Length: 500
Image (cartoon, one colour):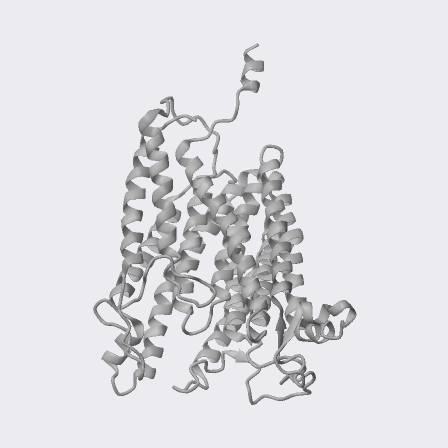
């Protein structure tokens, strides 16, 4: 009778852990159902399709790169290495060096004040090779491919190969397979990444990068800004590497004792999710201009005018873009598919929890990588690195609380105080996220919720003929305030050990 009674008891989760799970799932839903479809719609209906091409290639690099990393994990740890780890170490070093070399080359050569993009985009406007359909190289228009995005993607895959091959070699020497939990190394990596990001955001709210370059190098502000961006990239890069290292190491420990139950879901997420999605975006990036040219010939019941819009009839397809109606159709398809997927995750929570949890972790990491790789333009890179680091910290914390999430955690009833702690924590996190996502000013992709213009002490330089910008750090003040209040509330919520 006692055993039967235990089986009938519902699973109980710590309220503190439940809040973190809720934040993670809410973030996934907001991005996949709201932000990503909106991004695709804006790029499809923009004045030119070069942004759509770069976006498709960027998403393809994220998804295919993630799939390659998952393949490396399965070949090294399911259950023993299929390929010697030293081979992945060597391949990882080659990819890391190649990706870093490409990133350095495309951002340091061909740079002039009139060409701030350097050699970042391919093809260039003066590059011509077998042009068709009005393109520069085949049908590709200028700036179809972001070489910095490609280099950073290759660099990330190479570093992941080195990281996991070292872990596999350590396991060959040490047969221990238990989960040590959130180790001090993981905690310190999360703390280092958080402190670097928060300190930089606060400093950025007071000192604008371009304004500082004009102040330090009045004779050569362009050179000064390139130098400052190098320093900023190293600082934010260190924060991203720390957050990514904490996530990957914690995920490795989390899966290690239960690989027979977790490797199959991980492979399914990679092969059926990332690989298929990456292949679709890669094909779309390659054929977008031929596709527009073909659709323009669909004169049946006016489908051509319904789906595409061309500014000049003599320049097809280079003057064409997708119509608003086509954008709405694609937006609806993407939103519906992700909504169905999220509802399926709720349905599968009890029967296939490993698939839901691992898929959620991989999804958040992929969203963080996509945020960075889709915004590698010089004026977007810095804020994109901040957002990427914040997302990786979120998934690192999420994986840290996913161990034994249904363990008995306390005997206190929630009560009135506990309910206020839960509501206050969620409210402060929600408002803080609004402040964080007000930092990017990427018109028309993002719309600022809370005013933010960097440079309270050193403002950005004034553009001739325009009014001087008025600095406003409201978003950063709110972000810091909400982080402090949410931290205090969450501390007491976890400390009181309420039972669900």
